[in-house]
Length: 193
Length: 93
Image (spheres, rainbow over the protein chains, first blue to last red):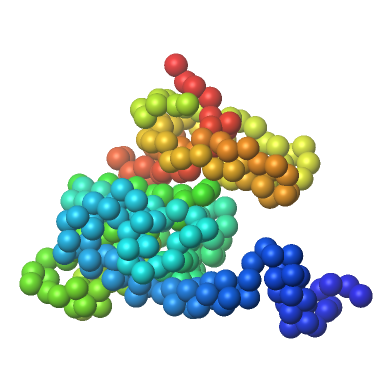
């Protein structure tokens, strides 16, 4: 029988049984990984961003070693590609793309938005990035340079955006609530709703 | 090893025309010149890894390109930063 026509659940059960029998990975490890994949969402990344806005030491760690910062935030990163964090400043704005496929910091941010994988996004992010983010209504202030990061190999990148003015005195929860998925990709900029 | 600030050229090579392969070097950069920003670490060569062959560790760099060197329409000062493996980079004097 053609493997493509096999009942998918039977096939999955067979592969899982073989992985376990051969001692490659235990059912518990698979269950744990499924649980952490399900838990990954933009809200996790937003919590890291909010913490970095409030805690200079965590911010420094996040920029130096994103993987460790994620681990410190309760996100299991063992065996996963390293997380790189791109710091937006007064003069630099980052935009993340994977022109080759759809590399994305899934462990932290969950599944990428559908458009992140589209050919149109991937092509325009390198060819016409300012026009592209304009589709989200994002215009960079005068004097801000754009750094497009094409995620082609072993790192997974997220943006640490700038904290919006007018959020002085806000709690970590309040700050995390305004950080959107697109802010951590760079197509949008955090704003007070 | 390349130092930060080293000018490099991405090899103008098209292994995909010579047979089946898996390459993490985007087409739009082949033959283009950029500047090494920093060493990102050593990673198993994806060109072997993809075919379950023994994969040696290779140096990976963040390399910065001025978009005008790649496309014609972008704003001056904007840059593209890409992860590239050492075996795809040639030193530019």
